[in-house]
Length: 453
Ligand code: GUN
Ligand code: ZN
Image (cartoon, rainbow, N blue to C red; front, side):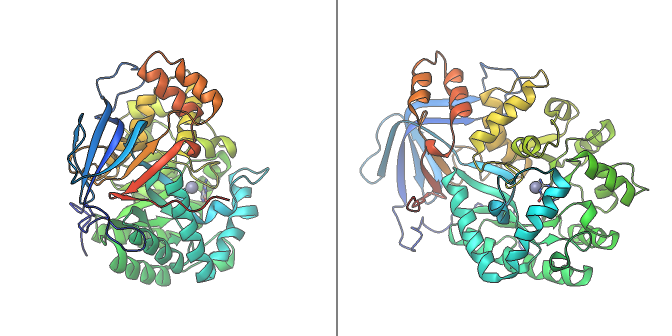
């Protein structure tokens, strides 16, 4: 099985979606911003901020090749975004592609929400054409929100995984996904079985893992919807191919946590269920983690798994407030995710703004630097992909988003009054969304935006 290590993608020249090569050498002018390391909570004047106002970012053969204050020679195609913010594309570490259909659904907490809205919507992906349409729409939407990489839940249907990988491969995107595993406590049309699921996983891994910029994630939905035998099968897949990812949900909602305790009476905790089946490691991405205890935090730190903090979802479904600081103090990694459709926006800016409020409610302050770090280099680092995504480092793949600092009269008014760079970026993060996005490049290829309307 090919390894994802060292696979930067972008070995081919940048392509327009239609296949036509674009210039091998692109120079993007703007205010270049990325984070060199975790700036920590509360530090407003951080040395980890790399900000070069009005510079040119050089992109050659899909990778970042340099930066300079003067205009490059005419061999470079110039994209002049002066006065705009040039950042690494965002990385959404937990999002459900079929749930664009149920975003903003009224009136339920997690377990009712799954049964009332989510499972019926996911059932529609049994039709391969629906899965293909959904995958295309989903990837377009990600890019239109400035998100260039994602860790994605499709559905239990193999065709939904093929569709997502195909669309991402066509765009040369860094995407991590895998077939959802569910053999119990789900409607019959969404249930698989251990042997069939294992066969499909192996086929999908062989077809997609390590191809282009794609990687496979073994994807048990959450402990309640997989039997012991299925969780053991998932652990078995990971044990023979440690460069696979694992994604699931953990300790999101109090009723869910109680249910898991009933279903797995021998486990020490919800998280411990996953440990027992060999599912935890540095490539494990666990969404939510709101209701973890000290032992769980220590276990996360020990195994290197990350919590994909999903603030808009945790607020919308009334799940709870993540104690991010406490997790990190224990040595656990935290990335940030939209979790659409429990989450209410694909915009990582809106998600960061809600993350700030969730921490504020607990007496903690999330700086713009910490927030932007977490959505870029921090996520890349947690996924073992820092060499490829999440920064404007030379040699990184040129996944880049260009943002307008302010996209409304009120935001422009506020922006003009900002007295420091942090104040400006904090207002951008708090007031901004996809309407601020001016341009996005994937592996150096400008994304041609779909006609609006
Ligand atoms: N837990 C199990 N499945 C899901 C899902 O689709 N969304 C959320 N938010 N939590 C889950
Ligand atoms: Zn989720």
